[in-house]
Structures are given as C-alpha cells and as structure tokens.
Amino acid sequence: MFTGKEVAVLTSGAKYNGINGKLTLTTERIIFERTAGVFSKQTLTPVNLPLENIENVAVGGTFGKCLVITVKKGVESNFPVRLKFSVDNPLEWKDQIVTQVSAPCVPPMQPAVTRETIIKEVVMIPCKYCGGLMPNTSFLCPNCGARKTS
Image (cartoon, rainbow, N blue to C red; front, side, top):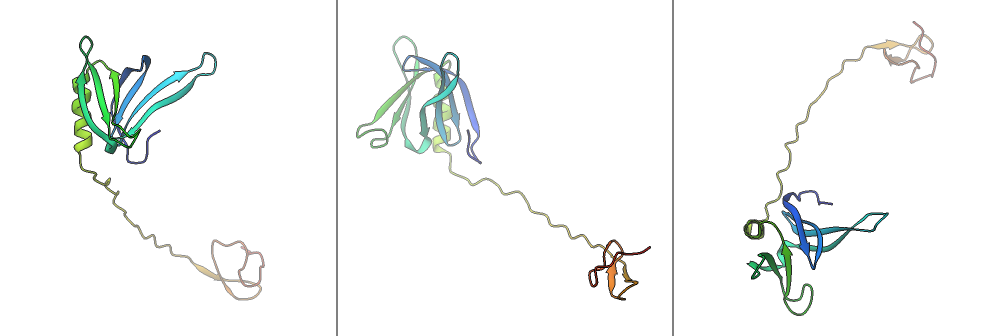
C-alpha cells in the first residue's frame, strides 16, 4: 500500500460523503479507504491525494466539526475542490497535515554499507593421474576430470 519511504502518520475511522471508512495520513499523501461488497469484501480508495496537491486545510462545520481539505485548482477539476471528512479530532488532523505538507522532502538515510573480506586458505594437492594441482576440497581434478583418491 505504501511506497518505499512512505510512513503512516495518523489513521482513524472517518466519514466521507456519508460513507464510513478509514482515513490515513502518510508522509506523502492522504488516503480514504472503504470496504464494499456483502460476500466478497473489496477495498476501494475514493481519495488518494498527494500532499503537494493540497492548497488549504481547515476545520469547518456548524454542528459537527469536520476536516476540510482544499485541493489545488487543476488537480481534480478546473476549480478548487473541497473534501470534507468527519473525524474524531479534526484539529489534530489539521495540525498533522499542515506539518506534513510543510515538511521538507528529505531523502531517507541510506544504510551504511560495510564490506567484509574473507580470506580462505586452500591447500592444493597434486592429482594422482595427471599431476596437476587441485584444491583439497575438490572431488574431481579440474585438469583431467579424474576422481580424487584419498
């Protein structure tokens, strides 16, 4: 579900357009997922919004407070689009989204590469048939193909 450097920041149950689902904020995008189907459950993703396409984040609503995300003009349509989500703590969501949107894109740290050189000492023995040298661990002579005799 996530890309290599993407990490989930916040996840909770939410309602979008009257549909219950799960809202997830990652370091790269906002995802709203819901399940559909009675017998064969499948996961649908009606919202998969990269953070760079967010123009504004607010908390709105008169009775029940909701999270309102304004998508930049030209991304979803020629006009700014407003996405409204009912979540338990819209202020926390707003703060986290603003933090992630304003966070500089820092490439992930590459793990330190350590190299280890292993030196093996191999005893070479003469082949009893051709006299050529072969490793002590070999079963066949690399020169003539004869079996090693003990």
